[in-house]
Amino acid sequence: MIIGFLIFLVLNAILLAWYNVPLGIFSLMYTSFSAIIWESIENSIFHHYGIKFAQRRDSFINCLMDICFFSFGGFIALVFTHFGGIFFVINTLLFLNLTMFLTSLYLAKILDIKKIIKKLFKPKSNS
Image (cartoon, rainbow, N blue to C red):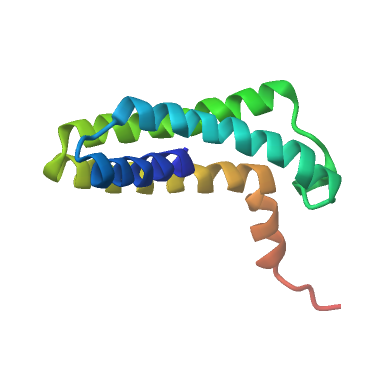
C-alpha cells in the first residue's frame, strides 16, 4: 500500500510539472498498471533466478490482493492530493505511520514474537 501511495505521488508530481495539470486518474491507472507489472516480474523473473522470497510463486489470490493493496494506496494518495495543503501533509503522515504500525503488528504475529521474547528473557537455571 505504501509503495502504491508513493508511486502515485511521484507520478502525479511529474505529470503536474510537465503538463501543469494534476492528472490524478491517469496516475491512479498507471499505479495499478505498475502493480500488475511488478507482480508479473516477481512471479516470473525473480522466481526463475531464485531470488523470490520462499522460492515459490504467489497464488492467484495473493497476486490479486497485492495489486488491490497497491492500487488502494494510489487511491488514498489521490484523495489526499485532491484536498491538498495541510490536509495532505497531516493525513500523509498519519497514513504512513499507521501503515507501518499495522505492518509491524502483522510481522510480530507471523514471527510469533511472544515465543522469541520468552526465549530471550528466559531465566537461566543454575545446575
